[in-house]
Length: 320
Ligand code: AVJ
Image (cartoon, rainbow, N blue to C red; front, side):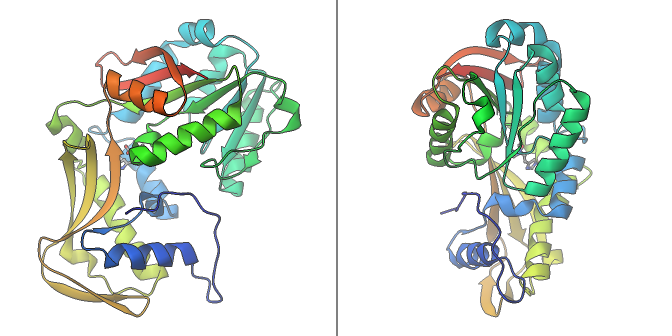
């Protein structure tokens, strides 16, 4: 199974990320080879994801941004003023200012595991909102997080855009939602992006764009393994595939072997047959009922819901 938890970086004597090596060796040893999606996001992978958000076929970023920029008045009415906005994950996106502009927040608390990104994003945000107290917190938000004393008495609004929740299998996303509920306390609200189930062709194109940016994003993980774990994976003998799994309502990214092959990673031998795959990412999609059920299982009650004009993406407000 995939290990989806976020962990602090822990390097061995030769500078190898221990968790990365363990995850890769374990994942490549399974009969269905699978790697946790979080390893897609090294520097090259993060840049490639930024590039994906610009390709025509990849609609989620555009649709969510449309919702956040057009529904400000409704957010203000439903959320109210003075909340401490707690953003789960990188606050470096363009989405945060759209929300903060709409609701007159009492504070902004970006939570992230990566301290450098976090401080840079916090500084950038502070410059845009001079009067707003900003308290960055470096933490693993998969667990309950102790918020700064200065925001303890304020009601909270959790913000989790991007349909990042869709990367997790339900048992993990339910755990995360419950941790968020614990972190944010009573009277809290949560504004969360969830991508919607739609035509398979539209979904598969969004994850297999004609320019091949998503393919590069996927295969970069194999290159990263070769780079960081002394691997000999013949990356040119793989192709990218985006598959809709209807049973689990998710797009799966796979790296498909085009030939029988043998390779090694960190001195361990592996073999694959032509057609065999390495499963590298899940992106779960939702409808009204499945998103409500997930939120309820995570101890949140849905109270409002918005979609873009094409009905492709949803932003949901829930209350504790
Ligand atoms: C960053 C997880 C929201 O699942 O749509 C984009 C990642 N993978 N194209 C998504 C991704 C391939 C993206 N998330």
